[in-house]
Image 1 (cartoon, rainbow, N blue to C red):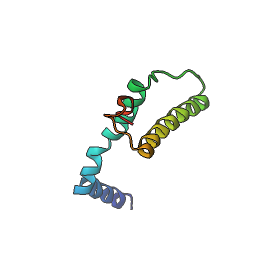
Image 2 (spheres, rainbow, N blue to C red):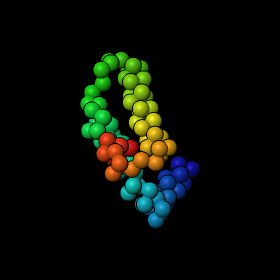
Image 3 (tube, rainbow, N blue to C red):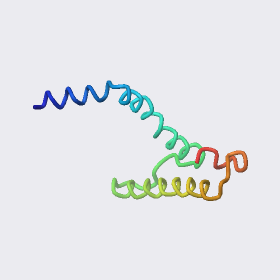
Image 4 (cartoon, rainbow, N blue to C red):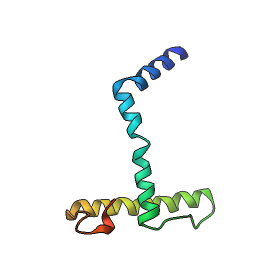
Length: 87
């Protein structure tokens, strides 16, 4: 039974759709983390405990998503506001 799951997973991953998905996957989160670090100056966590770090990063991610929503709602482009270039 386990071999059947492995074979099915391998077939899905090596299919044309699977290869396309896998080629795009590493790029998507990198852009977000790069934007948070470079454009918004978040270089290190200020809190220590794992629970607190999760809350802190949740706030950073929330701020990132709110910036994206603001860009979409106002219809601004990166030419109109370079600070929102990667949002």
